[in-house]
Length: 275
Image 1 (tube, rainbow, N blue to C red):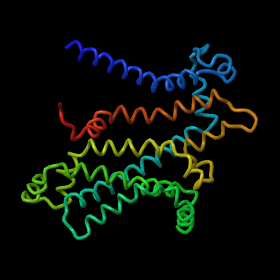
Image 2 (cartoon, one colour; image 1 turned 120 degrees about the vertical axis):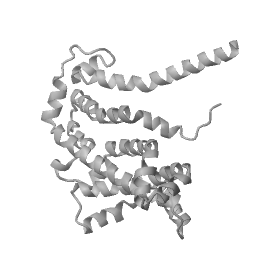
Image 3 (cartoon, rainbow, N blue to C red; image 1 turned 90 degrees about the horizontal axis):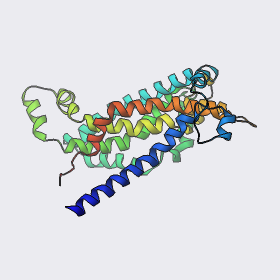
Image 4 (tube, helix red, strand yellow; image 1 turned 60 degrees about the horizontal axis):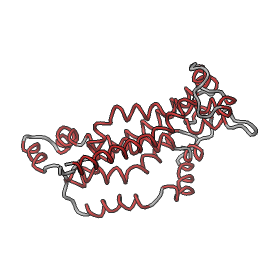
């Protein structure tokens, strides 16, 4: 009993230390957001002289942050809606519908996980140019949705295969069409997996600067990571406003995790066995 209690104490101490390691940079970022550039260099780890919200107001107005924020919400939200819709239907077909070549279709999606989308930069750029989608948000939306499909299909297919097949059969016997069985019976049961897919895709898309830099030229269409580059001057950088912008940009990520944390944890622990 004493040995087990000692291991519990060590485990909690380790988890506490890991929490401090991960949360300390976030806390430092929030504290730094209230400082001026001069104060950051004079007292980098201390508390700010004042806790005024003026830096955040300056970022919102001076940097057109509201425009970048709205663009990021639209691009990321539309990409997420598209990938969740397509991936859930594709996963349902692969997991539950017997058709010829089903395993090959699944392997095709799995192959997409192993091939980084950035390897196809030139063909992708030429494709968007031929479709006349350069300097539009649709170039980002279609690229993000396509890049997120392989992993999303992989996660959702495994989750759908773990559900009892009798649920679909009972729905069909009761008169449901195949789509109704998917929409009304199976889809509500995979909410934890959908939350996992949403968070896994949302974070890299929200923070991505590569594809906006490749496809977007107009300032009114820039997303937050690309718009934040205005703070980096050739000779001087306004670090105070930069950190304020970083805090504002992080709020949607924190809000998404808080809203979907229960479903996200349930999706990660699905199939776990109690000891």
